[in-house]
Image (tube, rainbow, N blue to C red):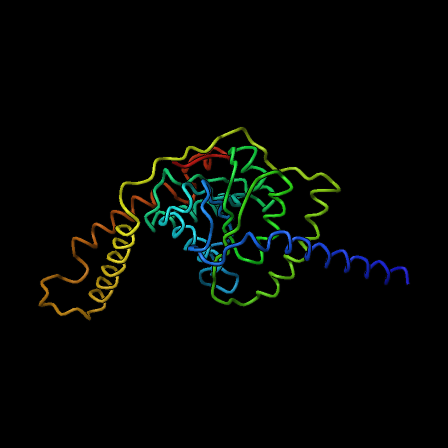
Length: 287
């Protein structure tokens, strides 16, 4: 009977914690990039590039797409890419940096936080290390209530931008884990006084002036890039007639793209020569 009563109490506390966090943050979450509020900094929470079932992780892709759209629309002026980099072979911030770079986000508009080992660590470091004073949190809708609750407890003013992702296998496990994580958050904040794993020295963000190119021009350039990529793929597969005067696999555009890909990938090898990565310090900015 005692054990049963304890289980019932834990369930009630867990339900209460979840309802509390959801209700406190419900009116501060936008569910489309166009609905999200403007903020000087957008914080993108790291997750694996690949899913356990194989293939690209749709939750990673959704966060990247939303972050790029927010930058393109100037709803945020700078992106803090915070994730796990415990080993040289797993680097969430660099994966995000590569993907956003491919979407025409400038290097000066991104800072990499290599010690965002958890939601809690990311938000503590955003305030204490990177001197963020106001932010837009970019993540899935089921993750944002806990992240925003932590930020509120830390005194960091935030709003949420819920990203959209296609349905994926195992979503029930993620939601169940999040339900338990919300309960654990209460202990982190109010019972055992959790601290960030790696506090790190102060590195205030430097927010660069916005680009002179309009958002419409950037969107048009991305559309043109996608169209060229599709044409190149057709040429390589022999679907483009040779009468167009372009030998398959040897166009100047393909060479230019290859050079661009090389430039983007060379500084980010497995040993990660991005700032702070190779030197063993998990805290650094990439500009």
